[in-house]
Amino acid sequence: MKSVLKLELEEAKVMLEAAKAAAEEVKALESICIVDDGGYVIALERMNGGRITGPEIAIAKAFTASGHKRSTHLFNQPGGPASTTGEAFGIHAMLPGKFAIFVGGFPIVVNGEVVGGVGVSGGNGEQDTAVGTAALKALQLHLGPDYEVVTQADIKK
Image 1 (cartoon, rainbow, N blue to C red):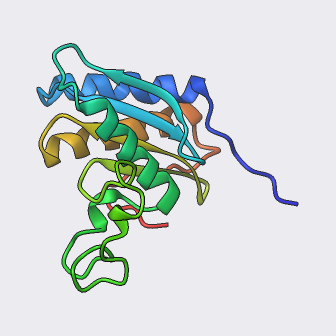
Image 2: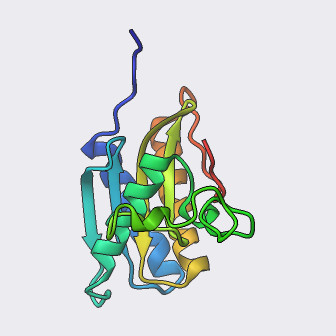
């Protein structure tokens, strides 16, 4: 048997608040989604004025990052698995509307294990990345030194 860490609402709320603060700082009206390790939504918020398409896109980004254990933008980089020469070309077509292969989704990795994902939609790539990594950094701060949270943008577990 293996013991596992589970992301819960308390942590998701901490991440969501930090993400919203970062979105305000970079002047982006974002939708932010936090999912568990199964890709199910724990917390979702669309900022006032955010695009109506944002929540669905944020959910897809978080689902993809959690389920496939990598930042979503890594799929379509040159030579990436979803590029035209990659081994997973067309993977996004397998789960239409649920699988995102562009910037804004990040797995939540704690002590080496993927415990969920964060998806951000509404800004440009740099803004979405800043908001997503702010959420990860807030989780690290919240959990303290007994836990190691991966906080950089390029995450591949």
